[in-house]
Amino acid sequence: MALTVTGATLDGETVGLRCEEGRIEAIGPEVVARLGDEKIDASGAPLVAPLLNGHTHAAMTLFRGSGGDLPLMPWLQERIWPVEAKLEEEDVYWGARLACAEMTRTGTTRFWDMYWHPEATARAVADAGLRATIGAPLFDADGDAEGMRETALRSLDRLAGLGPTVAPALAPHSIYTVSEESLRWIAALGAERRVPIQIHLAETEQEVADCIAAHGLRPAAYLDGLGMLSERTVLAHGVWLDRDELELIAERGCTVVTNPVANMKLAVGGVFPYPAASDAGVAVGLASDGAGSNDSLDLLSDLKLFALAQKHAAADPTAITAAEAWAVATGARAPLLGAGEPLSPGAAADFLLLAPGTPELGIGELASNLVYAAAGSVVDTTVVGGRVLMRDGEIPGLDEIVARAAERAHRLGL
Ligand SMILES: [Zn+2]
Image (cartoon, rainbow, N blue to C red; front, top):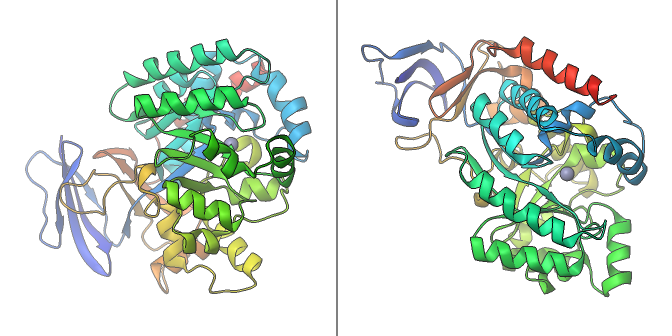
């Protein structure tokens, strides 16, 4: 069925938007609904591109509110890993459905995920109507490199057949939980299958010190020596990357995804050097990380923290502009992440309508208000592939999703 939106505001102009077969068929002041179209009267609602969350662990919504004040390693070792050992597919499915509902509500329509039972996350994404690139977390710190390889191959095969809205990736957890030999193997597999590789990198200063002690190289140079840095590589965090590493990353065409709120909550002691990364020509995206370490998936809220942290760290209010921060949050500065094309005929029909008359957006420039004044609550309607996932702030079936996720968290003792 076709969808027609009328009366929306785009760049100061009142426009209509007609979607057919998942794509924008027409956009402009003259667009009107045709007989049989689903219609949205969006009078006065700003029409904007959706946000793109470049790194998360969706089902970790189940861990929200647990162990929130611990340092990274005790948090992982005492609170996260013992519970994750008990996870079942249905836990991950409902945790991911909860994450998808929260993302739909706050304007994120595509995300990159790294979590156990990735097929369950893929099912949740398909049922929720969102888009995602998903990888099984790969570890061999337990000495089982063979088991890790089986997991990698099996997950690629299973995720490949799950429809057009889910793309498979390889997701080695980090340089401190995957051996040199296994990282080399994963890099070769990624090249052979032409799939993206996402990995946590340079999150803490300790990780950098340990990498230098073990390999005589900083993290990015170490990964490069293993063949891991390419135009298909997404590096999550990058807080402690130095200038030489940023230049290397830019040269290899990798993407860095910054997670400012998770970094602040885990108190990693630094800020991703966005101005230096931008100068070097690195592709950059924005992300929340998992709800276990954020604890919200509201990327519009994180966007403010991203911009403010950059200004604060640089002691320079011009370190990043609102328009630039908005471009990062929508995936426009990192093509690999898969943001749709600008809203125009032929582009995927993925967009947001913001609440008309909302106090945060009524006065001043929209980009500035979106970055500094708004949170996800300003999103009124979320559309993906021409399908309305939320209208007037209402997501069908939300009560059941919240209840089922809470049941699964309770089962896990969370
Ligand atoms: Zn993460």
